[in-house]
Image 1 (cartoon, rainbow, N blue to C red):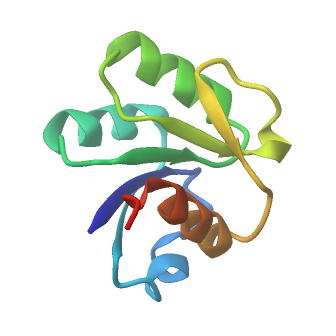
Image 2: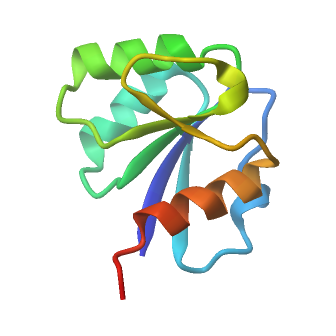
Length: 107
């Protein structure tokens, strides 16, 4: 089981977009502060996926407050963000699938 923390604004409803992948658990946070809180409470998160206009702010806050945080990812459309790996742009469920594929251990 891979656990991904998806961070997006409150207008984005991510939960239903990820229901189709049984090998991936997706936790959601609606702002950078909520993301930090979830990271502090759940150390089994494998990666953080940043969406929206606050992706750079969320990345900066997470890196500053939690240097041991899991790797951070964002769509290419978010631009270059320090400490963040880029994923191809796509629908949220496509991005989660791409990230899950990167995180799967080799057979």
